[in-house]
Length: 315
Image 1 (cartoon, rainbow, N blue to C red):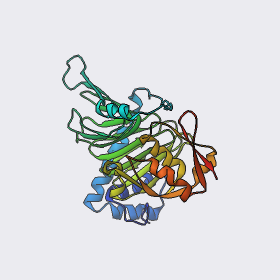
Image 2 (cartoon, rainbow, N blue to C red):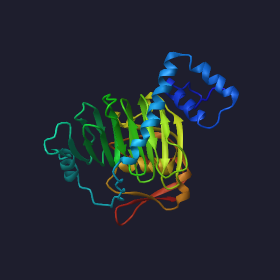
Image 3 (cartoon, one colour):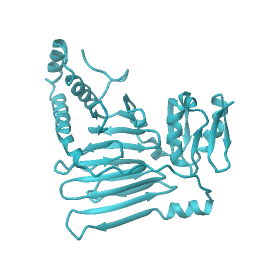
Image 4 (cartoon, rainbow, N blue to C red):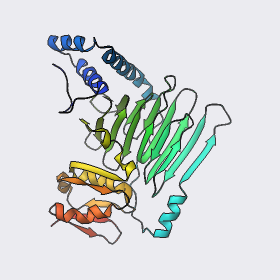
């Protein structure tokens, strides 16, 4: 056998991830023989060894700071002048820790416009709208607290200082890779552009997920569910191009992502509506265009509540 993750041929990293997970569950004799044959390729052996190292390093996750709970965003009136000011006044507060070399802290709060940042180690990070995060780097570890929102980061390789992203109910661990991570009200979504990433969800029954290029993990903290799927290169952090494309997506998941781009919350009158599937795309600068079109796509209607929230109801 040869573990696969979809109809599209998975990357070498994705194959290594699949084999690693499979080998932890008492594989059959036939599976062990197939794995030995797969490992004969030097590139395969190298990728698998890197995943073994990722797994060993997960012990460091227990030393991380307590997660910051995600506070539900309150509805507020949004005026164009304030939106412009918020875009211009993206808060980036930087301070060194007592002047100690290699130690730095940053707090980033992005409102309506995405921002691009260069981190102290040279990593490049794109921060999406309505995102709050804190950065703590020292001589041994690089740590980012994603309190809310979404980021894409191309991580500068440093085997001596792994990079962790603390997203509350889950933790991401990498050395040198590029990935997208979105922390919403309902779900946590991790998509890998290249390299290898470990996603740990402490307290859950399942093992940490080890992901390779073109893989996406979706974690639902409320249900404790974690699923992994294969995506295309274009699907990873497509928001950076101004449009988000989705196929056969649950309405609840879509709302979770669209909420990043709106000042007021979106609510479902009936949670069962979240199971509706929808396909299409939306402009991150005009998410309401898709919301206005929902009644033409699904058997729903939208109603603006007195407090500014948008409620989706059955027709």
